[in-house]
Amino acid sequence: MSEFDYDLFVIGGGSGGVRAGRLAAAMGKRVAIAEEYRFGGTCVIRGCVPKKLFVYASQFPEHFEDAAGYGWTVGETRFDWPTLIANKDREIARLEGLYRRGLENAGADILESRAVLEGPHAVRIVAEGRTVTARHILIATGGRPSPHPALPGAEHTITSNEAFHLEALPRAIAIAGGGYIAVEFANIFHGLGVETTLVYRGKEILGRFDMDMRRGLHAAMEAKGIRILTQAIAHGVEKRPDGRLDIALSNDERLTVDQFMLAIGRTPNTEGLGLDAAGVETGPGGEIVVDEYSRTSAPHIYAVGDVTNRVQLTPVAIHEAMCFIDTVYRDKPAKPDFDAIATAVFSQPEIGTVGLSEDEAGKRFGEVEIYRAEFRPMRHTLSGRQERTIMKLVVDAATRRVVGAHVLGPDAGEMAQLIGIAVKAKLTKDDFDATMAVHPSAAEELVTMYAPSYLVRNGERV
Image (cartoon, rainbow, N blue to C red):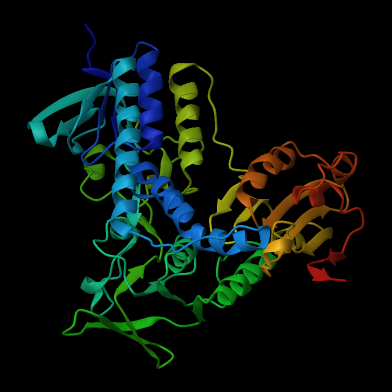
């Protein structure tokens, strides 16, 4: 008989927790996984999946407009918000079922309950009022939208969680924040016909992205009619008798909207987990501190995903879970590799990016070659749309290695996934130049920019 009830107890049923639990169970380990809400986590239930469905919905008005240039006559159109919500909910329920069946088929015990640590090997299943033991514990509880309790009237605001379940589409919305969540929702709501204002305290949206992408998207969003107020914050929110909201801004302006959405970051879900009882150390933001193998300060307890606040992306959580399995159960210690992670912002137009920005490369290397192209996408030539595509390669001049690639334009996210392979493989600009172009395509620009647009030497353009 084992001295423990389980070989592995997973707390959290998101992408990282489910992957680790399913793989361990498939290896014959005794696994339990506890989730107090719904399986699938932020990504499936209230994040990237429903967000992408909303993005698709919001793009149709432009598709209808563009059709005229190609000879199509589109009749009267009408959008129904409840239909979108119902169809989205049906798809999310289907995906959650797949996550559950995967765990069940692998032989894991599914516990629909909050789980709280009571020691380095003990977990209390709150809904059942019992405590079980496990040789290893994996914490994968993810994160949640950060609140703003200091904001007067914060109780009248919503976050991305509530945005997926609004009973009615607002006539006007203000969104606080300048990160990818704020930017994506600004484009979504605007595309669905909502008067949209983005309020951001910084000088430019999308900090840490390449500046050409940031400025290019900013200009494109404003050209569509999205209002972007930078270097401004909300000082207070008041609810009017008619239910609308008055927002006082730091620039002395007042906005009147139907909804005010906060997208000001995310907070790790660590409160009330019993981390102190198990000896698990947390950082200043509540994140669980882990080493390079995802081990916490407590023996036999690991943590993966957003709860560690390393890189808040679903594929990263899954990768960390795979490394955990290799380390603990396959005798192949594996460290998550966070270098050259491809990512996308599903704005309109999209951004796809991997590797270093121009500014980051300029600080790291003595001389950097920048290859940049800006053009009107072929699909817009007949539609008359004036949006521009920007493509950019960042090259370390000494080694000729492509250390960054950035795209703003249609299908940029798809391009980022593929070009991410080349950047991850440390291919050189010469490898790009030797690659035949696919013509006619936008992506061919990535292999036909033969001469650098300019150099960056010691961090300065020359």
